[in-house]
Length: 256
Image (cartoon, rainbow, N blue to C red; front, side, top):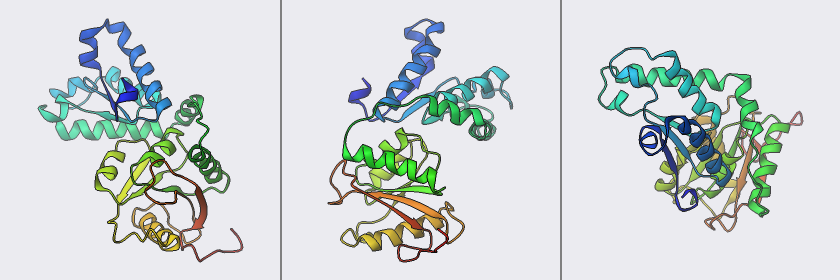
């Protein structure tokens, strides 16, 4: 099923109708693992903060359930009736975000993410993505920037769960919207006329400007790791990796 889909939702309420309650947590983990292996976005949903339909705070068990989905490595978590028809929709959203922030600040969270190592495919694109993640870690880069059309390169980068945000720049609005679901990806839609795909230096300058606008960098010497594929627009192509400072591709301080 995962192989045929663009993304998967683990709707536990519906899943519980089809199988025993004790099987749902195990199936949730198996589905998330399979989606991570294939690099497909996976959303965990339904009955996450169920009691907040009528109450301003969740039960501690519900808070733990939301946290577990994040620790499992889900790309996204989703509210249902809590925000669609509940008495406390805003409080539900705020509470879910509080739990996300708390889990992602926990050192154990990174350990959980690193404990799952997806299968490595032996393509040039996969090698570039792996190299970008390692380079970002070595030089303490602030972000990985991926130029992408169909979103494949950005999804592969997300699959590896790097330590830094992934800025995905695409000339396709549909791709940008779809990438919003992928873990750690901050998509940016840039109209095709604005992105000069025949001038890589111009593309790098545009990337630096976007990184500054999104607040991913705060200093001219902050480093960015950029991946791209040429000819641009070729599905799955990733054959370039560059390290540039936020000041732009023509700037390099000797201290870097």
